[in-house]
Length: 195
Image (cartoon, rainbow, N blue to C red):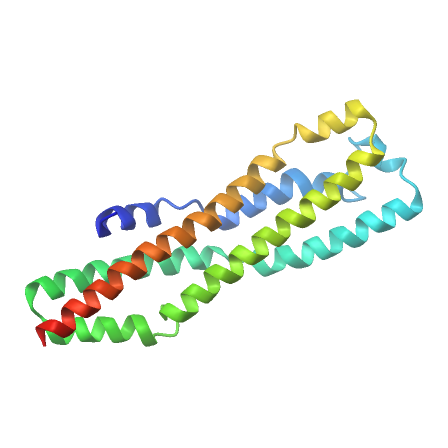
């Protein structure tokens, strides 16, 4: 994929914060004790089961707090793509000083540092996978306790689609950063050769 296509892909990434909010609205809110009036089977759970589900929801909410600001990763990718396009243009124009400056900026900047960006993406992927695991575990508990028709109704809420969107965005970020990294290495080598 060329750099222009990568930039378009980066800019077309869905807003992670909005996806996370939709997921919470469609899955977490309906099963919380103060908002689950439309799911009567939750009212009929034993005290032990309610406590177990609440404990797991608490752990789930802690994971959500770790990914709440994940939209920053999309913003970093957008900035990174913008600087790579600038680096390519300056390299083609033969402006080695500016190319060196941009290269150093991408390697050493607090916000755009390549190493930190890779770390952020891996950390986000790990946490989104952990959210998915906790989601499936809590759903399994709920399905064992719910009557069939209420379980089917609960399954038809859009929460699974929103979770899949979060997982998909995380995977796409990983793919895009790999492509951007390959272009960065190639451009950095090209800049050094022109010195």
